[in-house]
Length: 288
Image 1 (cartoon, rainbow, N blue to C red):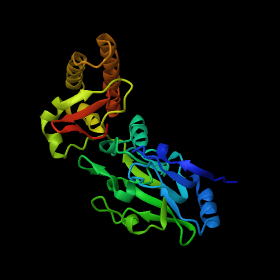
Image 2: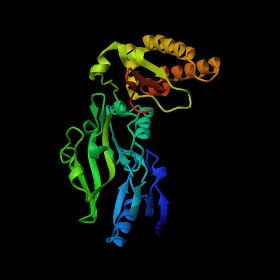
Image 3: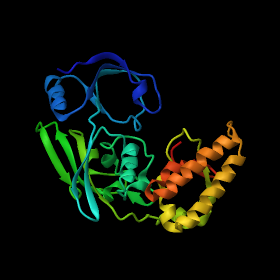
């Protein structure tokens, strides 16, 4: 039986790290639990929380906070060229991108490092560097609080546009899982204007080995330049990185960076493991 926690701090559940209390708190791991919670708490105000990256708490909440925490990824259909993957809403978006690339499923790599959960992604039709999630969504499955059952939306049903979807106007729908159609034939999307200019390559700096994954656009580099040229470019980056003061031993930095470069070169679609961050005159471009 589900148990609510009382007077829970929401600080660990929002990316701003804002201290706020919720009177009641419950993690939802499956649709059955979600139905049960909503059925027995019809008169209690509640809100849905995903990755906590698109919310700013300004006060305590005198109600129930439901954390969507259902997990799981499964391949539903596979051909020689495409794969259909069903992902539960509580999965972390960036970790899903990493998972796809580790399995050589292409398409969403330009959307790496966007914070939040898979369930929240179609609501805003997240996008970056010339790519949008709507290009890869096949179906969105939601729990309809009015009919108390699951309903599905095809890509057309979602009415996607720039950072918009039908779900923004239907707050009685809770996204529980999403189906994506991805490609097995990796081809980089370099249509974004900044990616057409070679100068962006010179603005890349490698993070330390223990830091976050790199922006996925670098994953396209090896396909664009070829293995030989990428290897030369990677070694040059490693040398430049090691010359910068990082608070670590230079030899250790070189060893780690070279290791990551070799991993990246061996597996093109996981070039992100090289841990790059884009640097522009105004600061870091992308998440840090």
